[in-house]
Length: 330
Image 1 (tube, rainbow, N blue to C red):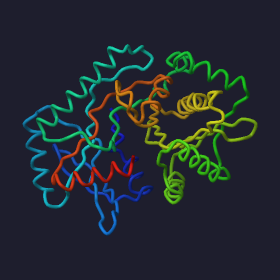
Image 2 (spheres, rainbow, N blue to C red):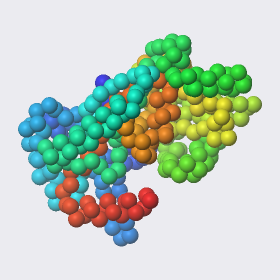
Image 3 (cartoon, one colour):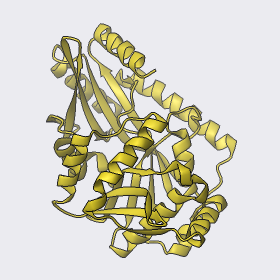
Image 4 (spheres, helix red, strand yellow):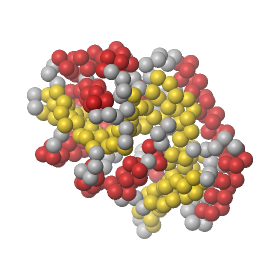
């Protein structure tokens, strides 16, 4: 399985776009890179140390020993340390119908897993998911007919409606870069989610101009109504940022653009497209639940991952920081 979270692509994104300080840790016989997120709270600066994409070995005693050594090494320096565990619980095709019993079973299994990991390794579910608990990828070696067959009926209808309505797509050039950011920012403000700053966006553009990249957009009557940024890593394509104009949601602009993206990826030799992390199955109140519903309608395969966990080194400081963080994000 491709481990995006420990890939050179993600390391570049963290270092060159987000400008996060980086560090390395040896764990379970492997060297992992991590990032440091700094947050200024009045006169104090807090630092969160995170390593995403860690794979836990099957040997429970070995894992206990390694995590205990890591905690001992870090104790006194940091008050908590976050691990993104990429172990796969189950992978399934979204085109297959998921009954309510399946969703309930997945939720019960995940809650049981969290209790077991907490009991065995003294790690607790992170109060902020920096590595998603589920991922959806699309196999772009499939033909357009096969891709459409994997999508649900509503999705197929929207794509056909967009094509019939004269929607087009093309590669974006530099003259439209500023338009993308302003529309992306407007979408973020409307939906209430965070997005990259203008400075980070400028760093992103500088980064993608160094190597392989692709920006594609959907247009109607000459107006850009959706756009996505694609970054490449060999045969893998990652799409971290995009937007669509909510005024045109009734004609399926986002469904159309993703379908064209999959086709374009295949034409350029890419085998897998990853559009980001999504909500775990069975958690209908998860912040990404509605987005997951849309992504699942496009087909693809969904992997349920262990997710993000915290190693708490100072319970008092951890509690204060968690309280402060939750207060800010209400």
